[in-house]
Amino acid sequence: MKALLKKSQGFEGVDLDEIQEPITKSNEIKVKVYAAGICGTDLHIIHDEYPYTPPVAMGHEYSGTVVEVGEEVEKFQIGDRVVSLTAIVTCGSCRYCNQGLLMLCEHRKSIGSGVHGAFAEYIVIPAKSAYKIPENISLDEAVLTEPLACAVRCIMERGRVNGGDFVLISGPGTIGLLALQVVKANGGNCIVIGTSHDKERLNLALEMGAMAVIDVEEENSEERLMALTKQQGFDVAIECAGVSISLNNCIKLLRKQGMLIQMGLFGKKIEFDSDLSLIKELNYVNGFATEPTSWEIALRLLEYKHVDVLPLISNKLSIDNWQEAIHLAEQKVGYKTLLLPNT
Image (cartoon, rainbow, N blue to C red; front, side, top):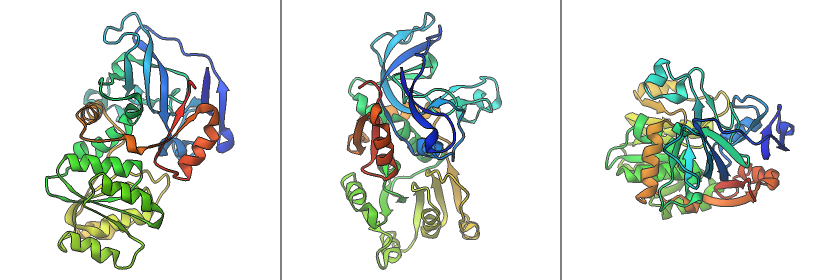
């Protein structure tokens, strides 16, 4: 089968190749991948900024259809539409596994980095790691369950947004716009900030229910932002851009004892104003991808239409055109770019 592999260091180490179709074990299901989203983590893997075990088929945001079921599996049948956790190999006995914190298992291997992922025609996963897609969710929408679950993990499970909170979202990309919708679902008042390059994205944020959007490069942007909070500062700031200046803006604009939530992955060491964070007694939380509870909440948000992810799907390309797809993702053309391994 075709698979987009990360074989060695650098972009030159990425190649579309033929590999053996995976064999389904008794407790597993085989999924024909419909589509897989290119994530910021995939780009970090390509540039050797995130750990991976080569050669490995990348991709962890996906949806697909079950085509084979192991003999011990009772929960799924051929034809079921599914998504799955990323942490599919864990020890099952450490303190983190016992708490259901699979991403923190010392022996964890995730699809797309530790074991073969969804940039391939087929993927085999443990049945216990899979979730059926509700009938009213399309396969396109379901691809974004994983990044939505990341927003759920950071904002609802690790962080907290109370009804009426003033919430700053820094970075209006896919993650930022998903965060906006999760915050709205929890009753927060969202203000989204970006740069002059984010004009279309900021406009979409308004359409999705942002209270206001502001270009931080414009004159008096900080004063305008503080005025929106009646000079009190933001209760919560969510960093979604993964750049140092964005993080420092969040720290500066938060009120004392406000909550800073990091969702963006920086991919390198950065400088930030730790003294100001201390002086303000900020609460800092983050979230390392997702846990099973995050997926359950994310699927409910999709099923009951509390979030709308379809406007975030901008590009759909055959896996044969993977170089163009990665270019679109790296250049931030639109929002989410999907690879189609079976077209």
